[in-house]
Figure 1: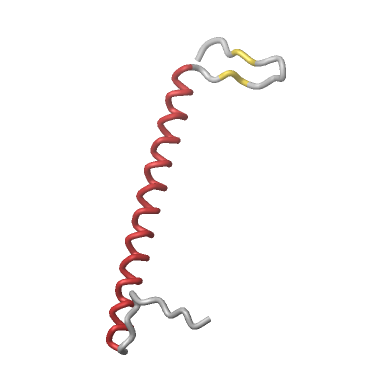
Figure 2: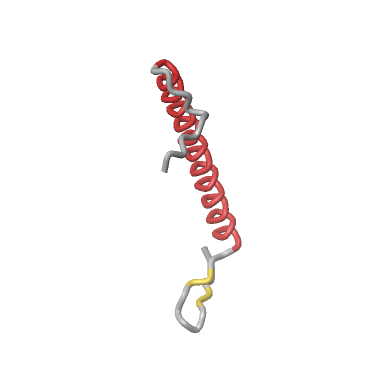
Length: 69
């Protein structure tokens, strides 16, 4: 590592390679978060389908709304 630059406020200015590494890490984290969100959505859909099937077994149509309010 050679000469390092700082702003007037004393903040280190990252080198280009450091910027690339940071951007790559952010991209990996974003991809991981997206995969987790997709898995959670898939699990929620599976649970909803299972609940809907159970309601149908009890004679309740989950696709009909009941507006008795």
